[in-house]
Structures are given as structure tokens and as C-alpha cells.
Image 1 (cartoon, rainbow, N blue to C red):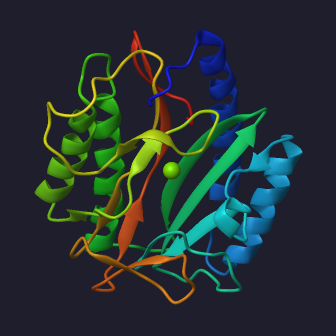
Image 2: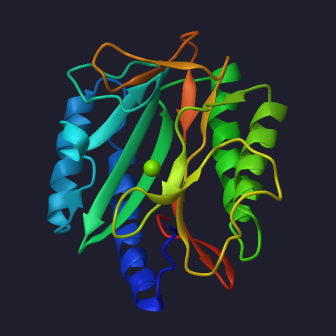
Length: 247
Ligand code: MG
């Protein structure tokens, strides 16, 4: 069942999104050569608690940390560790919070140091794919208009979209219906209605779309070990068009 949020719930989620966007902005400036992903996690936890919020990830099905920290061929669900960022890494920060019972979820890919050529184009294309997906989050569009926009743009740039992980509805829970694949046939799927809130999150691979689970049981890695990029926003479907809450 897809929950339709009331105006007051949308307002609460707008706050959760705004707080998260501020945290992401602060973290972004710390993502530099030499920092370990555990240090980024600690900073994130401090910032989250400083806003009287809770990490949505810590403890989720036993996940041990406050953020997901995935590097290069790691697609999603990387676990922060002592590993330090190096020049040329693609670092994916995925972070969600619970503020007063409402969730927000956001991810960015940061090119660490100098990232050029195809890897840079992968990051730019994934960000653009998210923008194009968000633009379809309109009343009376179909859910797969979002999916199709993400897929067709990503593939037009020579990349592939991950099949095994999807975006999701969000609200009182981090993961609500509907699932939002990053591939699909436009003009199909659920009709979008005012008050739906969607976490739209393209995961785009430089090579093939297939992923495997790494030995830690959490982290998804590309099968061909080529890099992957990920961006995510929490978006409300409103009468006035898509409203990005995590901006
Ligand atoms: Mg998400």
C-alpha cells in the first residue's frame, strides 16, 4: 500500500529532508584524499545527533554504522572502515535519518582528487539521470516514467543501471511501497498522486549491470569490478510538481 502524506506530514518530511541536506553539505567538504570512511561515519553520527535525529541505517537489519560508504566498484551498502580515500576514488555516501518519526534518505557520489574521462562522465551521467527521473515525479504520471527516464538516459551515455537494488517510498518508515526500479517501460506502473514521497536513487555502472554480494554480507560490488555511481534524493509529488526535500 502506498501511503499518501497529508500536508502536515509533508511538512515534517520537509524538515527531515532539510536537516539531512545540511548534514550532507557539511560531510561533502570533509570527503578528501586521506580521510578514512570510518572518520566520515563518526562525523556523520555527530552531525545527526547534533540535530536531535537518529541514523536510519545504524542497526537497520543489523547494519553496524550510521552511513553507507562505498568506493569505486562497490555499488551500495559499503561499511565504513579504516580504509582511506585515495586520489581518483569514486566515493558514495548514502545517508538516511529519522527526525521526529519521519525519514529522509539521500546519496551523493564524490570524485576524490582528480577523476577524469569515463569515470567523471559516469558521475555526471548518474546525477543527470537522477534529475531526469525526478522531473517525471508528477501527478498523473506513471511510476515507470521515472524508471524509464533514468534507464534511457543512463544507457544513452553508454552505461548500465543496476537491477538488484531500487528506490522506494519513504515516510514513517525508511522503506515503504512502492519499489522504484531504475529501469522500466514508461507509461506503466502505479499512477503518481499528490502526497506520495519517493526516494529516487539511480545506481549506474560503467560496465555491466550485474552485481554480487561481497564477503561481508552487506556490500554490493559490480561483477566486472568497474566503478559505479549513485545519487539519491527524497522527493514529494505535489500539485506544483516534484519537490526535492533533501536539497
Ligand atoms: Mg534509499
